[in-house]
Image (cartoon, rainbow, N blue to C red; front, side, top):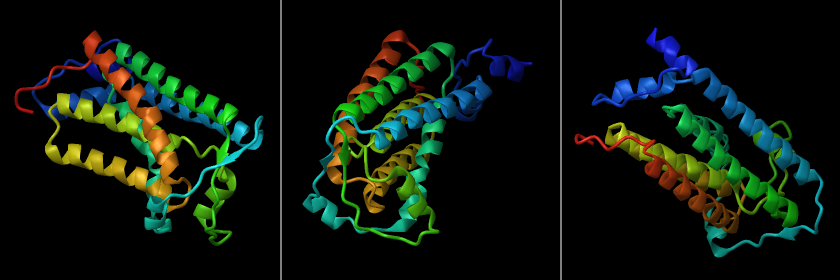
Length: 237
């Protein structure tokens, strides 16, 4: 009965001392709605992203390389880390525990995506990609689809930063063990690095993603705290 009520959203989670109970409750809360919303938001963003990737309204600017980019070696293995963003972002929604929190999450994530799309419309950018792989290689397929446009700011970095801060706050407040908090930080860092390691973004794009993502993420956390949507930190954590 409790599972059904959580799934429908007629019952919200009340955090307890047990980390596992807190985590399971949050995952079960409106799990299907959260999954569908996550897929829908990603699909909607990509619709506009790819449209303006192929229909530039203004002259495109080429983002220059920096000495930091020269230090990052191309490594196709990071392709798998790069695409793991969509799992990472979905996890940040999966840990939501009530409807008010869900509305706020969607609002701020939508604001972040809208800001990026508007930037891509009025200030289209690209990078020079001098890496070529096999035509049948999955990385090359992604490069053919994504091309090298809409480079600045990196939404991969901005959205992963949003997910990292969100997950960090919630892991801390539900009494998560230290290794999960460290895993969260490492996953975020690897996603950021992967954008340069597979030559999809340059350091300037990464910096732009941080500058876009950080203010929105901090505003979201401030909103959650002021509304009391985040649980208080457990004494044991």
